[in-house]
Amino acid sequence: MKQEIVQMALLVRDYDEAIAFYTQKLQFTLIEDTVLTEPKRWVVIAPPGSKGCRLLLAKAASEEQEKCIGKQSGGRVFLFLHTDNIQRDYTNLQQQNVNIIHAPEVQPYGTILVFEDLYGNKWDLIQPITT
Image 1: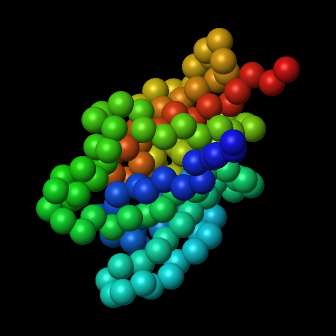
Image 2: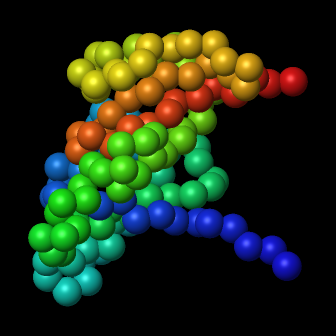
Image 3: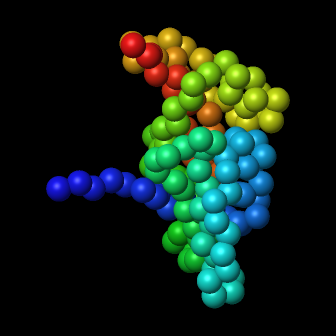
């Protein structure tokens, strides 16, 4: 048996503001933006060069969902992003005024920093140790 997670939904307040943040500030690629039934859209993004899991930007459709924007993991780090150059990406995050929670730090598994997206979701940016 073979299975893999290929996409995760990320609750957003507004499609266009989320697309702008992820594509301009984090340099993600917009894979798809299709109108389904107004106002619902199918918006998929991925990190540059990624062949793995993608994010479906899902606009909150109820008051309950709106309350969960930025809190999908209850305040813990929600998403983990690997990089081949953490210093380059750290510089970009600073230049883009992205909120850095924890500056780069070496850990046994690699160098890591923690940042928040536009809604307050916490992300780990990790440059894994290569062998």
